Amino acid sequence: MRAEEFWRRILPPGGLAQRLTAAAVMLPVALLLIWAGGWLFLAAVALAGLLMLWELYRLPWPAALAPAERTQRPAPSGRLPERGALRREFGVVTAGLSGTLLLAGFNSWPAAYGLLVAVAAAAAVVALATRRNPAWAAVRVAYIGLPCLSLAWLRTGYPQAAGLPELDGEVATFAMLAIVWAADSLAFMFGRSIGGPRLAPRISPKKTWAGLFGAVVGGIAVGVLAALYLGLPPPLPAVLGGALACVAQFGDLVASAVKRHYMVKDYSGLIPGHGGLLDRLDGVIFVAPPGALLLWLIG
Image 1 (cartoon, rainbow, N blue to C red):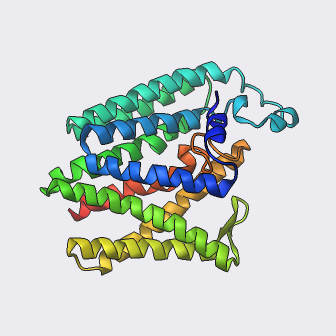
Image 2 (cartoon, rainbow, N blue to C red):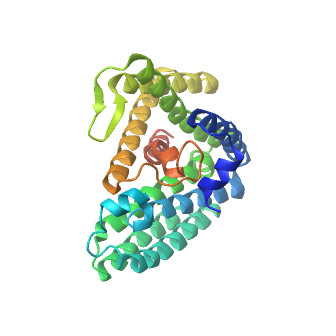
């Protein structure tokens, strides 16, 4: 049974009902995993990373196209022979990502980041050997692997590197995810209620400048709340929250551009009402690396 059929049987039809039900399930699970930390959190990050890689690697295959599009748009020359090569590359990349997070679990951060670079190079070599674009192969690894490793470092490596209690890693991870969630929610609310000029009509026709303003407001609000909770001066966290909210919206636009290029509406149907994990975590993917970098520089 396909994921779409499974969720259609369990959840009531209708986009809003599915989105609310899925969010009500995913949010407590995410908070529980952040609170637990350790190997449980790393295992969840690894599973999410592997599923996102699966969603990304399935895009160039004809199976990623809707049935109506398959009849109207013939597969480009060389697409069908790519399936075996992509599977080999997918195997190399997933094994490498698992290895990097395993090293992260043992606090071997230089080795973990070094292995991630090696995996990107290996993926590029596999692509080059099969006459495909090696740069895009390396980008795939960085697009998923770097955020996963950054999330792992935020939760477990950041407190140790800065000499802070474990609770600070939990707060840092939650605050970063809260910025993305607040930015997405307020962008939707401001965009729907205010409307106005489109932000990038060729990429995502529904996004507006008003929505971007709402996203910044959400990021600033989370930054201020985090500063008050930690007893820090609010101005700098507020600025960082607003900046990361803009980064999250840019990540959303990049995901939309990729889907538009491959003529798909969603990356997959894993999450009812939301599409795939990449559809739901597109902002987190872009926010995690700069968020981790900023904390490393500040701490």
